[in-house]
Length: 629
Image (cartoon, rainbow, N blue to C red; front, side, top):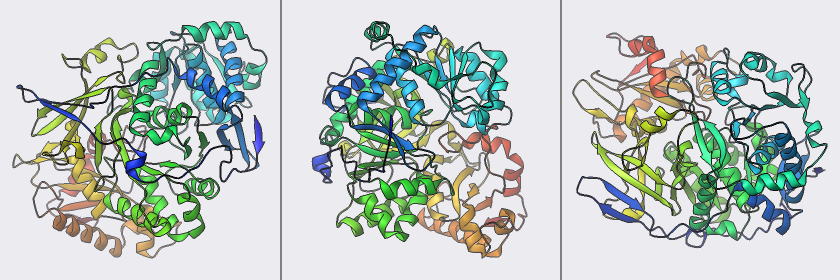
């Protein structure tokens, strides 16, 4: 490893800039088969090409083809970049793999990683997969944001890990104490200060390499070898461990390369914060870089005011070729791009595509990103998306074409088959293919319940065609089947679609919304406020109590105006707009299951936990904090 000056142009990566969607992406094509039972099958007419045997083959190949090219980079304590090239990464993986094998880790004794993204995290994870040891990257929120560590304790009990890694022991001391009675694993820490007795410094794992033992273990890794166990956030109860095999990960990236062929011409450079405890950040983004010999700048920022400043600092130095984020991240990025010409130039300098979470991106953010790219480049940067889950590694559909608006999740990728099943007036989508999990970690009953009698995974989402007469124009996300409900009139409310429209209509006050109204006469919204926007509208300083801002007349009036905009946009249909809204003064709680590690809201959990606020929303005489039409 070495410390280099910031590589603003990533000099060791070719950077020919292609931005024409016709050149970047494969043509959108799909086969649609209507069955007599009412189901519709969708699949790509292009067969899935041969993929790698395992993730380690990518690292082995790039260590030969581009040994000095920067693979990973993260900020060092002095603010520079700590980097590691492909050849150095492979050398460290073999050394770390030696230690894992000698400590007896294996298929039933995984490696658990509790820390956030970082170079050490990446190398340990790759080392485990290289020698056939499953790795479980656990959401850092379960260690550092949880008060009772209940989810972390449940995960460790299910895993029976052979080793647990933390970057620095002191911040994780309480979490490590909470799980201590539940395992006999070795604690490894890059900085063991303040950790439990017996914690092993990471440097000790780098003392020797047994090349022959590592080679034998690597040769034994096959497509069915368990590569990872990723824990879903879970709508209720304990997170489930999703088994990710080497076949899932490798076939997924092969499919991605077939629909995004520019990746093989221009190795990707990305600046990314999305957590490796989640399939989007780990399996999609990290593996996209590794499979195609790119460079990943580990971003210590988050999609939240304050930490996002670190993201902006990184984007001022590094020009990405593809940029990934969730809607909240784009909500913070857009005003920064508008206000900072230098940031705008660097960000768009060689950007080939913007990738967003299609199901949740408000249209005003889509429009703003298009507008900014046209102003900077004279043409729009393609806005693309995809859809899937932890159980599908994650890619199942990909919008590898320029859609007309936000929300299009694209078409099935090569090797993946979709079944659309009529359900409650919607089309429930199910998935089958090489990318789909064989099941849940040590949970046969949950595994059996997750699949239908044809082997399709029941993901629980609904979709509809963007154009029923032209299926090649892709699918639209249509919400979660389990979230939808009926009003007292018997009319169904589509929560997913209304949520996105609500965020759009209530901008900039709403960071997110929860849709209420089950068995009631009207739809209502519990609104998670955008605190800085509320304070600004109220004319208050940035450190003013949030309650003062939420009670300001200007904020209440703006909330009411947002309801009017939503009503107008939806044409007055009772199931498509809300008649009342309440700004929440208590943020969602991860301990209560109200928020996932991706930052998305668990609608059902919030409605159950905040029944008093729902009653307040629907009071016969609402108080002055409830806005009504």
